[in-house]
Length: 456
Image (cartoon, rainbow, N blue to C red; front, side, top):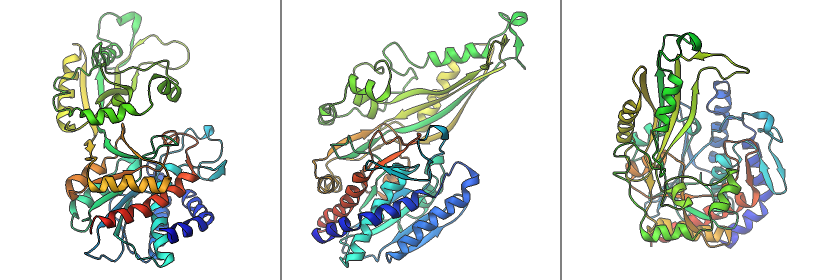
């Protein structure tokens, strides 16, 4: 470790320049105009992995390319599969950026660029960890495989299909993912739970066209009023979701897990500080961190109907709609929830309108046992890499492929977060602290060493 860490310390300047080159590629998967940049980003990774002596494949098909790579495989060593994504979110609204999103700048020890934290910077730390072994002539203590996708930010299916069809090729003892965060700037963390997702769209149709509200008001059902009634009926006065059976399969956090979460210093004041909201709100009987990480939710993501331009326009709108997402926890089944939600919306809908519920996206929740050997190896590696004791945290969002890894590969998914919760991912001025980049590389090096001990 001493030799490897000395190398990493000496290579910091070059490792920064290499990351900046990666960040300059505008690999936005949601916009077809950037398809050539998607190819460039995949090729960038392929070239670097080949330079480190790995066997590399660029896997092409209907979606964006997957990058697969592996070291020589020694059956006596544990195998770690590293997952990440090279695609990034759109940059809109660009005028809110303090510097061009694909011209990365470093200010006060922080990189500002789209993809800096989500996920290029975190992913790239793993490549640089492998480099440390290769360039110092130190044998890797584990077998390493990479599976890197370019569709994570647009919900593509290539990586899911590939994983389901190639479990033997991807066989490993653990999957390493760094697309999460530390708990805060002083507390490294390993994520043990992710919420799943059921994402829907409610469409309400009324009259054949917009109607004059003076001539026809009070004679036909207003779709705007109807969607408001449906949305208002999704929660009760205690903040609980009213979908029948919604909580039937929810796994309650055990006493030890609840105590661990509630020891973390996060309450009303911190939430107001971080969100700018006047106060907290949500399901009664649970702490803020429990509601944020391990309780299911139902939220309106978009709502529309009628005229919303400047001035007035007196109409009864012909249509209305809402996008509604439900964050799910173990053992909720997204398909079962989608059916129950559809039935509930139809029951809430008033007469005089036609209602359609479309299910746009599902993802399974993930729970990784905290006491597994690989998870404990992750905790030790984080402490080595960051120089501070690490903790377990939950994550309110989703990394859908983790559920597929668990079901297909039957191994723990170790989520070592190298970013920060306030890195502005998906927002203007996304950032990544240089210390977290360098400490992340150290952590991955240390994790290889801790994982290797499990084979003895």
